[in-house]
Image 1 (cartoon, helix red, strand yellow):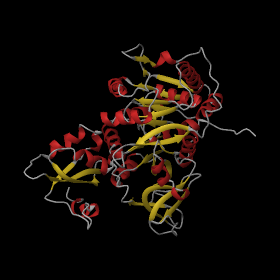
Image 2 (tube, rainbow, N blue to C red):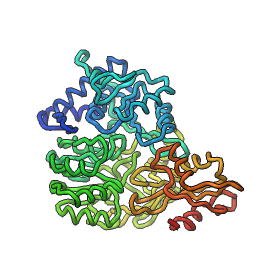
Image 3 (cartoon, helix red, strand yellow):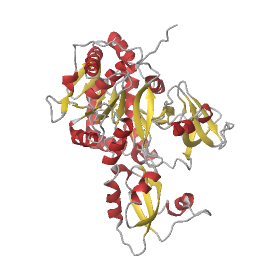
Image 4 (cartoon, rainbow, N blue to C red):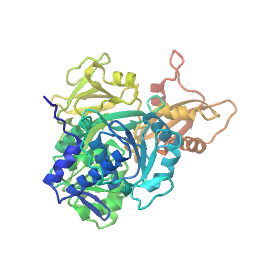
Length: 508
């Protein structure tokens, strides 16, 4: 019996039949119907095949949000290619590493990131062609995206373009100093969309205002969730609180997702300008209790949903925050959550341990990192590296991170101390360093670097902060630097990170 797959492209084709004339994508003054979206995906797929792309080939995207981004993604799904989503906030060295790691055959960029994309591609021989989104003519070695669209070679999805093969690679923060590429299949991505649509009770009357970048799993997840239901996606090229509110008013937007300090900025704009956001039904993400309370007061017809997940599995859980205050919700549709001890044994309800997950949205593994993939999926469960507990009603509570993970999340982005420490130790004046996360009213968490200078050396905190910012993504740089005489040590001589946290976490 032939296996029946249902791919992202199948979803696009289904919607073209069910919602043909309805707007699927709204980008500025451009409105693309569901039927037009399929047509453009078909044309793009034909152009990719004509230019030599096939199943399994990687396609790098370094771009702000735009309609072309979604058209290319749909075309890649049709031919079984793999899109590599590159975070444009990263530093030059990080982008170079991601391209060298994934070895894409071509790269697509928006105008803002054209030079960055071209410079990075020079060190990657696998990149044969450069394409430019939203361009009317060639610019240097970049071919305008529109020139790729072709009617000459209609493409039938190949049998090898399976839902179970790699479709998307998103590199996460560097646990051991190098970014790790999370590999997601089309089946994973479809599951994410179904689960998000169920969690937020979306239907074809919903309209998503895209506040998050499409290189982020949250941006992709929200976009796909409403698309699956036949609702429109309003694409915003980059976050602007006034634009978010105006598009919400104009298109009767019903939901969006934020990370600190985005929602606070939206509320500031809402209080200063008379913009009608009464169509909003819900907002999701994470934020401070004060900001959430302010949002609910200013938008009485909307709800705020807590949402827990990670690039490797999105979503794990979520709920209206009023449903079970303090929790991060119940497990998503088709998702099992268990709490394991340090020996990978399931614990009874109420006990604290590592949050582990079974779900069709769990990723395939890390790109070219078999050992890391095996460790994360040991015992047949995805190990999140986060700690939590579950109550008798199945609500999950987040209790922090495993020591091995040591993740800091300023504004929803992932920062691993080891990566920042490696950069700081490259400064000639630094002898030792420990990087920790500390509470921050604006960003949720902030990066603190506790440093020991080499004997006789002098260094300003601002100089060290800029040194780090010049080498990795600016959101990873320390917000605070402390210079101390020594760091606490364990019996074996290594830095006692827990002691550093206890001594210095509340100093700022």
